[in-house]
Image 1 (cartoon, rainbow, N blue to C red):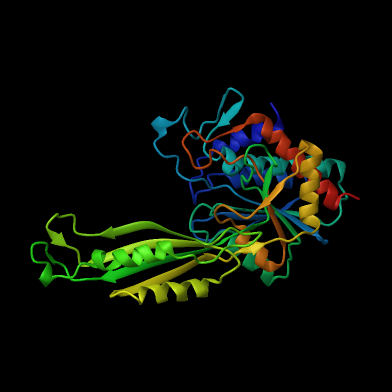
Image 2 (cartoon, rainbow, N blue to C red):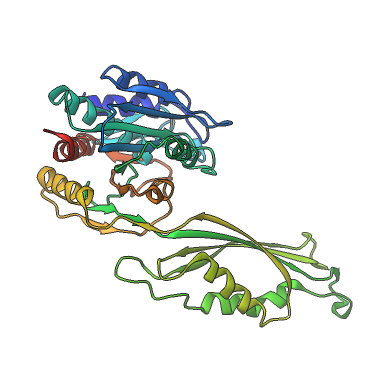
Length: 376
């Protein structure tokens, strides 16, 4: 059994449903401390974070990742217990296999191999690991980055092990992400008997034409690096549950995944302009999850692209699609940030799994990146 597969299985065996780390960081820290890393736990509330660093010189190369996973869903629907790793037909099954315990394991084994052959490497290598990526992401990477910034510890290159690959390991990497803006819209009406609508005021009826307008709006056309901004409603709630009562309030949860063509302030203003065209008594509570970021062509992109080609023969595609990641907290520091990990076809699904052969392949890519950037 390969070292990367063995470590991945150990991590899957830890039921680290967010924000519980369940011992994963202890396993990783022990491996890294054995090759010269200094460990600095940074817990906040229920969240476990750890910063591990080897060396004090620049440039600082950081592997970033998370040990927490999303809930498994109905366990009886899985091929096996989601927290007991199972190998079947060349695949490794288990919650977190792809997102992102396989990536974490590959980072560890790549670092072990690199430091064995390059004990006096250039610069420094560090790991920023959290148990709060799949959750609110308040007490995780964001808090660690605040501490690093306050003491002047600057990250030059950051590789995040999110599962970015599409069909083959390395065929796609993320060099940026869209911004994410959440809104909670509350529309007031007057509750009443459904047989006497003249004595009530139905907020659902008032909102219906506004909903059509919001969904039909073109917020921007995107650009060569980012797809157009997307508006999506995730939840609508109203009513008492009774069939003969006009509701007195309507609550709508929605999200913008937005490009660099607009700001979150512009999206808020345009939403208010659209809603003002309709007879609504409303309020909106806004929550910004993250601003868009992008790493332009530079040493990290060149190294990642070259490493992928060297190990797999593939010419990788740069992408900014998909959800948010902890890169949104690291990129604003000025660091070059790239996300590269396993195939993402089964992340968050029942029977999450990865090809066993991909684990060593990813470790080899990570190792090659370290060689290009930090070997003498």
